[in-house]
Length: 132
Image (cartoon, rainbow, N blue to C red):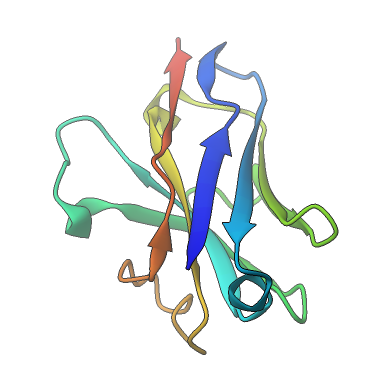
């Protein structure tokens, strides 16, 4: 079992930056079994799980990263394996980036591809609000 805790959310003006963190904890074996991690967001009014938007993924072994077109060039996903922490650096923020941001992780190969949202482990989310 793996627990994920996001932090770093808050309010920011359009054009600004914010860095989100996601700390993973749990059994060492479970943490090291994680194949990939990702960031997702859910805008206000889209509470159903299927309406979470995938925005970035990283494969923990290779470090390969993938981004949704909506954030490519503005957001950067990274990991600190020593600290078991995932990051999302968000630059050039826009009002439409306002959402609850979640990190997720999965030990099963391929679960971070194709924007799928049925990953095994999820954090509780952190709110980001971008004002114009």
